[in-house]
Image 1 (tube, rainbow, N blue to C red):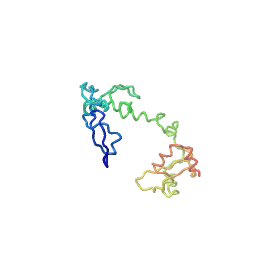
Image 2: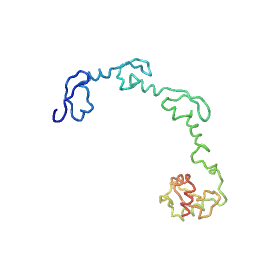
Image 3: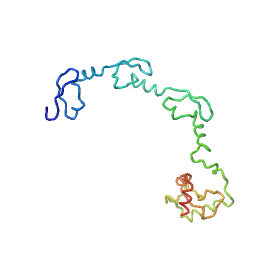
Image 4: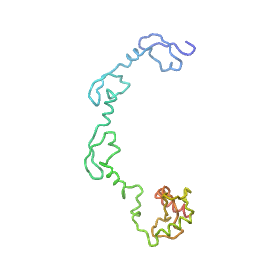
Length: 201
């Protein structure tokens, strides 16, 4: 036995060979030739072009080249649009993620009841009397032109929104209105009851 390795016996040809100690537990063969005899190559048919090629069974290859592998993944399949029912072709690699024949149909799938933020059509509710620039400017001044969640300060050209705490667009009482930046306002569309309690506190 060597200082930094071990002498082992090849399980195929019986020849004694030296290997480093860190490889000793897994090492069984003295050379690639003997490894090949233990794992003989097999004939495999390429899934894309049908060409037969030779490889070792342990590698589990399905294609004769990268080009064939890429072409196989990019092959086109026929699908039916989930919105307009139109038949269209898509790449094999995108077929599981897709379902829409166009960007327009994909957008339609996010409108109304299909959208995760759907609240029963509340967004179409009209604002009550008194909802005007004067009222909104008054809330901005009261809240020091600052988002009441993230403390971002309003500047000209930035998008801020006066938010109805109880989500009733006809309730314009000052204690029901609060200034939010657009990012935080979008965030309040989720878990509405939690936000109502948050603002009331």
